Amino acid sequence: MKIGIIGGGPAGMFAALEASKRFSDVTIFDNNGFLGRKLAATGAGRCNLTNINVTPNSYRSYEKFEFGNIVQNFDYFFFQKYLEELGLFTYHTDDGWVYPLSNSASNVAAFLEEILIKHDVLINKNIEVIDILHDDNLFNLVLSSGERLRFDRIILATGGKAYPQLNASDKILNSLIHFGHKLLPAFPALAPILTSKDETKMVNGVRCDAAIRILDHNELVGTVIGNIIFTDWGINGPGVMNLSHLYHKRKGNLRIEIDFIPVMPKNFLENSIKNEQKFLKLETPFLPLMNKKIIYQLANNCDLNPQKPYISSDFKKMMSKLYFTENVLGTRDFQFSQISTGAIKSLHINSETLESTIQPGLYFAGELLDVFGPCGGYNLHWAFISGIVAGRSIK
Image (cartoon, rainbow, N blue to C red; front, top):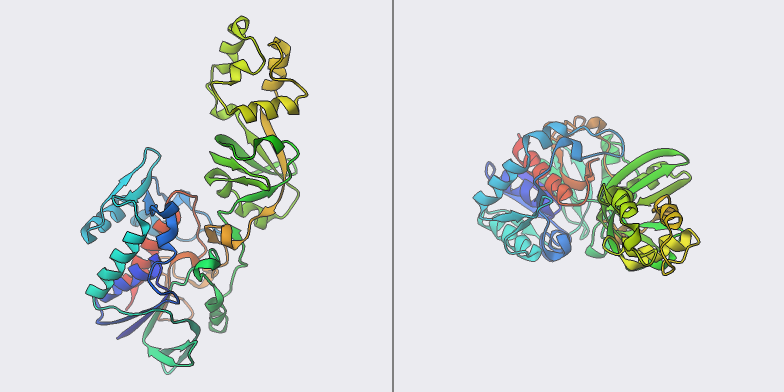
């Protein structure tokens, strides 16, 4: 049986690896000069492989998340053991982000390509598959060169539109329409958020933790506590990116609140009032807790001077407005997003095997499924385990 795998990212590589354990004729196609090009850029070059906190509740979908059983059965402990059996050893940070001991994403990509070569997977690089046809119980892959190749089974693992500068593309998804599959719109996800700068003009370049909330009028539609970076066009960082998909899903009158109270010591207000006679200036009690730019911006928003003598009423006024509010103007585009939402609707996909329910022999893996998680290794984890499931499910 001939197995064709379209896409040489993490999902495609692991699908090829699993398929090669049972079938001798496995071919992988990728439009880059080496496999795992996007993988080699992940984790700021360190390769954030997975997260020890992966659960089905970690993930969401543009529509309805249908793949909880896969995440439950192929959790962090399964995947850590799987990687170690390959010879890829890891460590994790205190917050659960998992990296290879080499701290090198390019090393991981090169290692996995060699593993595939050792498993006799035929690797075709710098080749784009532009269409998938089906006749006589076989799949025909149409290459950009005009050549057509025939396979018994296909695994589609091309990823989405995020990182077009690394040749990422979802053009092949249009081939699925004539099979009867429905597509979801493609929008940037895990992307920086563009905002107004009414209350944050003075804090550009500051990085900090805060509670972030997205509100549609007065309705809370998403919240998270995480790390953010203030910029001249809006805000960046994992905490912000984890909420960015809500803009494209809602496209309403969205506001974003950046609240510092939830990350401050619980007894801060009480202790500050108790020790207020020790403070010379209004800024003094805040200095051990936050960047000076944030202190000055918060004071400015309250029409206060942080360097003037400490007055209890001024301190309480600042404490009552210890947050920034900006309008959400959009997100940055695909070249700045970690993933995209454009995917195949889950309606006609077997949620256990990832096989098409309307075209037997056609399987899916990775980002082109309607699944995305937060920053921190969750999306790579999904890519890897969905590739494993697709590769193992071929029959």
